[in-house]
Image (cartoon, rainbow, N blue to C red):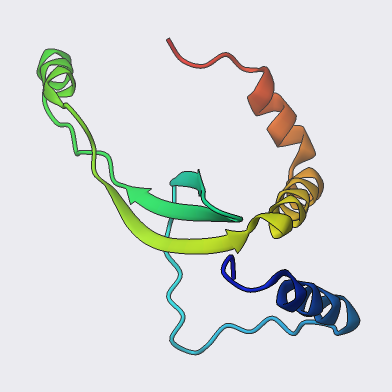
Length: 119
């Protein structure tokens, strides 16, 4: 979409505002767990990458677990989904996320914000 002429993008945006969108998930859509995200900005677009990180299973005494944790150099974040979003739509996405989170769990989110990060 970044390579499209500005006139084509404007027509697409006007169409979007004239018609109600019917969101649809196909039968073969797979839902995955994502607990990590990356955002990169390119020419007129944002690349959103979603990842799944599985922490290692740590067994043993507290000392053995501590040694294993110290020896871990990195964890693999497996890419499960990547999408390119036009920059002009990003504010709509941000607003939708904030609005949904604000309605879904305002008390829980405020409680999490007030806690200090573990040291």
